Length: 554
Ligand SMILES: *[C@@H]1O[C@H](CO)[C@@H](O)[C@H](O)[C@H]1NC(C)=O
Ligand SMILES: *[C@@H]1O[C@H](CO)[C@@H](O)[C@H](O)[C@H]1NC(C)=O
Ligand SMILES: *[C@@H]1O[C@H](CO)[C@@H](O)[C@H](O)[C@H]1NC(C)=O
Ligand SMILES: *[C@@H]1O[C@H](CO)[C@@H](O)[C@H](O)[C@H]1NC(C)=O
Image (tube, helix red, strand yellow):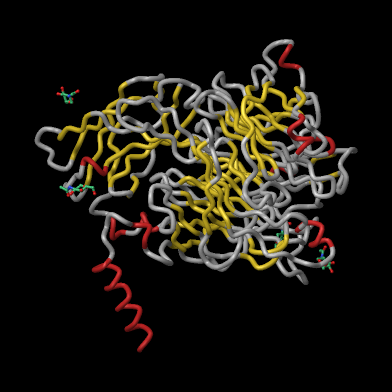
């Protein structure tokens, strides 16, 4: 009785006291929903496509998965390490609206690989392990489509590499185990057939632990590439193979990339003011481990992870890292960092001690954090509602079009192992609904009425977005439009994650419809700001986002 009264009282307090324009300030806010108890595979890699389906893949060399290939099909691969004749699936396509999934058929090992989505919406996956290390695989979404494999497509093997989409629509593939270089895909000319040496990856490679794998790569607003490995970063002019800037080391010098595995985002790109050019970019890196954590974990000692985030304006002539502390009194590693439609950063999944790698994570962190980059330092973080399911090594998280976050995976074992282990292999799939989805914000929530999802738009074009705001009380100064490139999530890094904030230039009431408004925006001016392809477009009002629509910027 007492507890139900206090719950009621808390709800009343939240409703009365919480100002509706700060949805993320509710500590413990948000909701978890179990979507699937068993998708049959570990969600080691996840990518949302413009069909509102998610392609998920694991690896082929750990034995049988929990999902049979349909139609009695089997893979008969003499080069496979574990099971030569395998009738189970190691990839699925999950359909978000119907909450159903179907098995896909990968022919070679996609373990610890990387990918980008091509301008036409085809997922282009690169590399993996063993028989898959130089293979490129493509998946063009349709209800019966499956993976296509193109052998010997990469110059060197790509295992633990990072990809990024380029302004010309190709992708660059950076680094990986024993790959201190980069290459491009597709190979459009004779020069593109080369791998280009990148000594920075040699310099950042710790002889014992590596710590330079799955580097954090972002396309800067001037067309250079920001590449972070271990404890430091450069700007690379990949067209000339010239390093144009070397950033200072992160204070403390501790490693942040695999297996120390913190995470990173390029913060939402926006103009300084309505008339300026988009000329600034900031990177935020959170979590990781103290140096030596992997080696210590091998000896059974699980070091507390880093509780710091480091933020830097990469377009500054003299940039420096600004340090901030994560909340909760603990460090975090194997944390995913996801851009939410309102420009906040969700920090989700992971652990607070140990290292990435088989059996090395300890003390899972179950509560997501949200970081508001626009608030004052010291008040940027909130702790949200915890899940019951630890998600550590080989777990993933991605934003969906409806504003929920899909969370799946976790397998710290070399095989699927469900018993007599600290953290069993996790085949379930959950959705986290951030606080902005709560019904208390329905009075400010915008609904996009047009254009139709899937519209193709060119660069620097004026576009009218029609929205309905149910409450009718539109505050124009709290209205903005965001466009987001949905990333590939693996090993706690979201490749190609990129958001642009587009300020409305003209907002007008639609005649005779008091709650309907026409918002005029201008699409990004060049493919350097937004490489060609599919983006999610959201209208945000009072920090509460609409459902997204897909646009294709070409
Ligand atoms: C999946 O796991 C369930 C429960 O452990 C088991 O009954 C089923 O046979 C498994 N299916 C496959 C295809 O491995
Ligand atoms: C799971 O791991 C435990 C502990 O290492 C081991 O005893 C057991 O054999 C493993 N089970 C499978 C199916 O590999
Ligand atoms: C709109 O929002 C701004 C910024 O929070 C605030 O200063 C202003 O008073 C609001 N206007 C209305 C009409 O509520
Ligand atoms: C704003 O949009 C309205 C309706 O489309 C139009 O009549 C008006 O001329 C526009 N104003 C500007 C400054 O573009």
